[in-house]
View 1 (cartoon, rainbow, N blue to C red):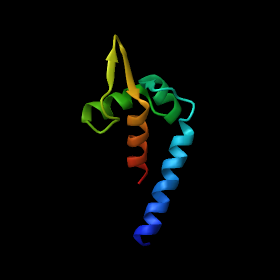
View 2 (view 1 turned 180 degrees about the horizontal axis):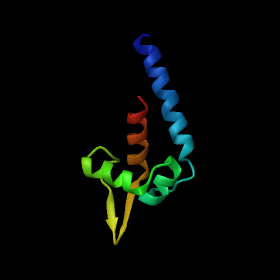
View 3 (view 1 turned 45 degrees about the vertical axis):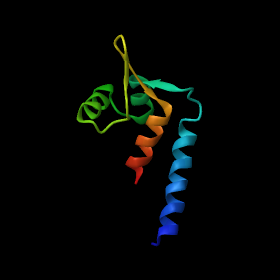
View 4 (view 1 turned 90 degrees about the vertical axis):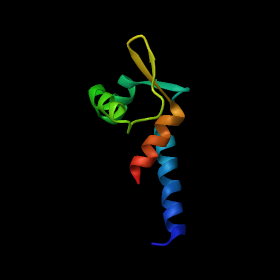
Length: 80
């Protein structure tokens, strides 16, 4: 597989992930993200704690919010 093939496959993955989350506004709660991905909210908390989850989670009261762009980047990086 050459670099052109890898770039094409990467672009296809990006489109698939963006399509999955097209209905989101600008943010998603940890619980909503966990439900969409089939994870528990605790798993996402552990991933955040390890520093390997979506960038810059925002805490508002007891809720954790992620920016849509951060979630998309995280999912695309995990798909490779």
